[in-house]
Amino acid sequence: MADLALLQQWNHLQGAFRRLNGRLLDDVEARTGVAPSAFQALWYLVSSPEYTAKMSQLSAILGFSTAGTTKVADRLAEAGMIERGPSAADRRVILVTLTDHGFEVASEAIRTFLAALRERAVGPMGADGFAALVESVVGLDPGSGGEC
Picture 1 (cartoon, rainbow, N blue to C red):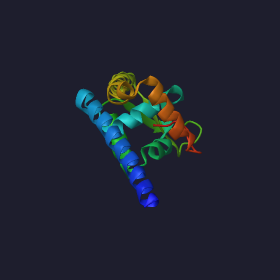
Picture 2: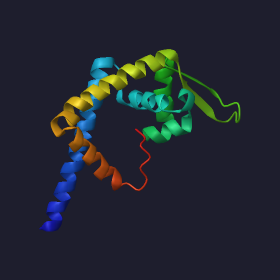
Picture 3: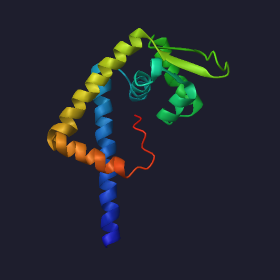
């Protein structure tokens, strides 16, 4: 019975996190029009040196196939938020760079995400409670790199 209770606790934890994250991303999309996958790509680029990353890095962050990442990048490029081009060091590598417009959109989406995070998680838990939760969970992840 203790094993079943432990499995149920784990299920509650991961389900609650998945639903909370979904609500946060829904808030961003509802308020800014930026879809969850596009938001994650923009967020990653804002945190990258010179707002540039390899397509393969973007694919790894999004957890998408090459084709799935290309679809996200195509939508962002069509909206004028990113530019793609070959790397000067290795022309086989495609780089994605945030445009000024992309930076503005990303900044607004990040502000929206942060406001929703404060409202839905930090507020109810308190800043110290939220920080303690983060520290506890991150401490369990040996590969934590802090990516979105």
